[in-house]
Length: 174
DNA sequence: CCCTAGCGGTGCT
DNA sequence: AGCACCGCTAGGG
Image (cartoon, rainbow, N blue to C red):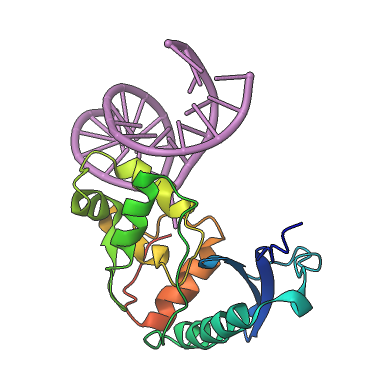
């Protein structure tokens, strides 16, 4: 019986002025961040007492960085991001998103261009929607052509809020 | 504004 | 293999 201390993904809450986010950690880092939702998030807190020292350290970084992001400030140090859940294409897109700086935006077409798949515009939208770590992997900085807001799976209010906080806000047409 | 066609990746059968 | 989604886009009423 291997005393394999299985580092089960643990999900921990983060209380912010905007509501309670949930951060999920795998053995290799932050693997998911979910927006507050009016729907119950009660069950999501699995084993708060069972998180390892490392997870608690990562969580401290996540909390601080999220607070800064919501204030429109540059991120502080992040925990390692575990993006292994994605396909090759999705990870390619997510890496590209990480190169969009604070206060900047790109179009889905520009992102597609930047990863050398100029035709995969729509697929880029799909990959953005599959982004497991929004806010830190800034999928909200990708707009539709003509500075239109485009979509956001977690709800367009979040996309708008994040863009407003980052100040890179122009006028967008709904 | 609306509609349409074409697009690439993903997931389900 | 096929098919139906899509956070898209360009082009044409």
